[in-house]
Length: 320
Image 1 (cartoon, rainbow, N blue to C red):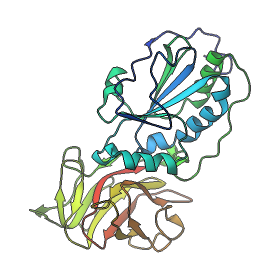
Image 2 (image 1 turned 135 degrees about the vertical axis):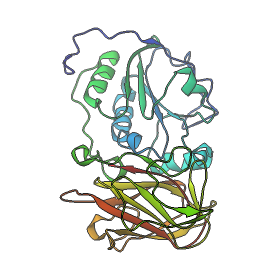
Image 3 (image 1 turned 60 degrees about the horizontal axis):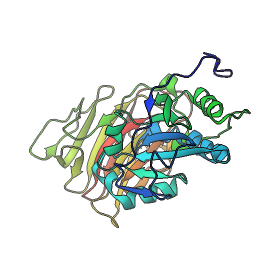
Image 4 (image 1 turned 180 degrees about the vertical axis):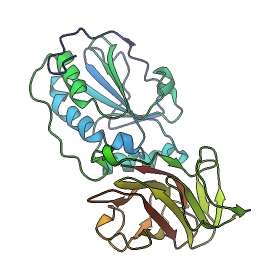
């Protein structure tokens, strides 16, 4: 199919599923499938720490702004992956910081997720004015095709939106992305390389690619590694331009300072937005933190983060 022409008829994939499972709404009064009849609807499943969704946000935001006047309604369905993402205040803060101004359905009980039989973050479903699903997209990419389908259903024509993503929203360096999402709780952890007994862990001298380790006094919980005493460290061998870590302080209003090293040295110009050139930063929010963004050739490297106070909860590494 030529995405600039879309000469093939769009299939009917089903009816727009119910939104009644929402536990609350942000930026809007509650919306229903009935109230949306006559509108083209883009339903976008997201969770605010998901780097894969963050890299789609520039497009979702631009479509909401550009096509609202033509009858498009964008609904972000926030279905949490981690327990702290169920906290409405956390979601409200993320919505503000990320400039998400379209309606957001809070899906803390997974009611909308199940109604759509959805299994992915991100996932986009496009419904026509009669409430019929005409297209879906799981994961990143496919932006031109998706926008042309929106235009077709709206009966408008024109140039595609132009976006300039930066920070978390910058597209991944796919050619050099050699590390998978790495969970730090025992339920989904893989490639854990620390020997230890009880809560005391030791990091090996060398790590294999995509293996990670703890050093210090930690508790491995179901979804996260939780630091019990100061000066605990997480080490990781990775191959990617960017390193992100989902983590948070022990409670709202507290902060845990940390320092990052790259191959045993300060990160310098390879620092991410959440640390300085010397690798210093602090965990003050339950969110995704960008710790490394490299320039130039990408190779296997060793990442280390040392927390100078106890209590931090570390959930997952993601890469870009």
